[in-house]
Length: 145
Length: 401
Image (cartoon, helix red, strand yellow):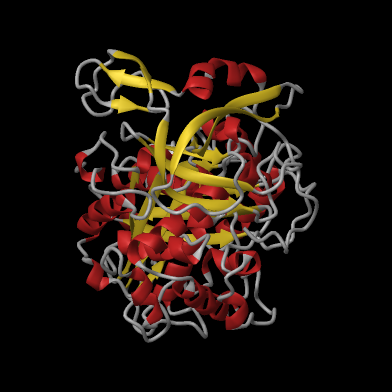
């Protein structure tokens, strides 16, 4: 987006809070999604109805913790996501996990576009402060050693 | 999805002017759009029988917004006003609601309202950096912006393009915007092609949508019988359809929940394909019948992917289609003749769908002065919400009654 022609200051209001983050802690810390016990389809984020077979028998599923880059992009456009204003450029990537699930994640400790197929692995990192002042932690990925 | 009994005619439409200060309340811009729209007709406020209003849920803090809007417009007590929260294609969804109310035969006059306003709480401009509808996006700091660029980059890599199709797209849009009095870029200097094709952050910004600020629109739809009663000359009929994808963008890759989505990732738009299939069938057209296309293009590649989804060019060939000049006047399908989001301005639910629809109507009415597609009889308008989780496609036809 190009904000050159706005008519006033951009209001910056956070709509995210600690309770909301707490409810999704399993997914945010450990990549816990869902697996349908009826058809076997795996999902991330977690679901309560399987869109494939419409069954409701979904079980927690631990997603693969490694994968490869599908596409990446350095977010340095100058209007960072709220809460990230004081953080330098971020490398954002779409990752195909080894079990076939696709997730979007930040690549830690890297600021350059990575080629398709680069191997990455799950890490937990500090994210930002939410609107109640608490630090949010969650998943990122880093280049596999 | 049958039992659509009546044709629906666009009676009038209006969009608010640019430049509302940030302290303008949503009621003010809503009333401005409504009175401007109603003033073009012989109808009175009490003739409005039904309606739908689209808004961003983070824009308006009042509850029961449908009633709030009906009250602020002074609509009759029997007039239902259905609120819609469907992000940037919300205006299209409001149209979808009212279109069905009329097509079903229950009502003859309906009002479609849209608004995007920075009411102290939030605005589209703030929403962009906040994120989207998935908790994971909020928590981990991803927004429209990340999605948009990842989508563009994957499209380019998959189909072998550099930035030139996007640069060409935005150049044509900027040219059209200089001919469109309502465009944010109207009256400004034309950017150079070198600026638009630069491989840099500045180049990316130059090829991205501008912002427009608080905006509202109003559209009045009537049944074909009411159009005849009002003596409408050369009525424009409309058709509309909708489809969605999962809000979490990871699920856009080979989505197992619907067999028709399985072959695709974020470089294609199957929800547009599904919506287009239905609306083309309803309107009895094929993509070859489309004289002018108005698509949602927060970047040039998004517009290109939309043309592919609409079947106007083959998947993966949109870049070449644009480079060959096919989206310009005289091309196979003149596109975004008002300048699109790149030059007209992104307002999200405020008017992202409606500006496309309104330009389509102007084209069919022969009133798109300086950018007119000669003899245009069929236009298609499209918009998406929440990074193509929601897609709406509308067909506008002249000479359909």
